[in-house]
Image (cartoon, rainbow, N blue to C red; front, side, top):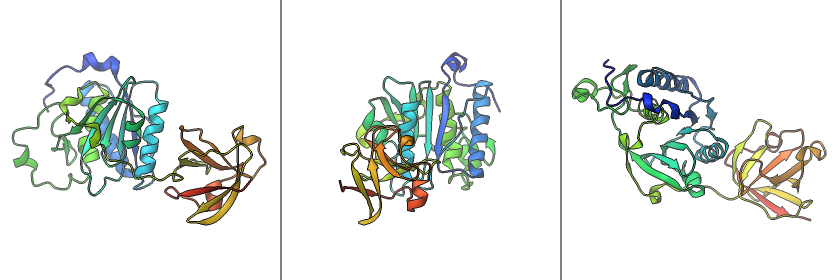
Length: 297
């Protein structure tokens, strides 16, 4: 394959960004995508892009994906491309690239609600709809590079190969994420669009958007209880437990007691925990459940 490109990427290398993948693809298919991204990076820059450990999302959970994107946007203080691929929505088939104003953070992925949270909390330098339709990789072969035009005989050679169309995260958007991390202009891949085109996130106050490895629930929405308030926890109108609202050091409270407190992750959220225990396992809670909190004294 020709190594003559439209422009020299070497001048961009000092600005190389980490690629942080947020996805519900966590089986061997992720390894496929990872391999393609590493290969494209090597072809573009004679170097490998830095791809951070994957941020795994529960299958089909757009709300958890949106939470993790927002959480990681808060956490990265070095340049990063947040590449999100979670459960494309049946009726929303566009994909977007955006950049947070005042931070060296680019995001790319499906416009299915994933980017509503982050675009509500941050202003943007730009937002674009991806217009690339022809996969860069077909049947394990790199056909053309991000930033270049596809070969003139692309359709005649690959138009009948439909097997690659399902996993565009592998063959289109992963390579674009690599190119963005290496400094390519987003306009190589998309057309500017209005912020009003971002698909809203379907989420409820009290909804569990994430469960950490300790079994603590991260819950959307804030509470206005005084410290020490006793709270009844309800799911679908049914009481599941009682807890105490706190705002001091969680682990100082009695072992196996349930506590609710301002989230350690993001503002306007609360966490539910069982001290030195697993709250969600004990209460049978899962991502997507909605908890109501009732003041009982």
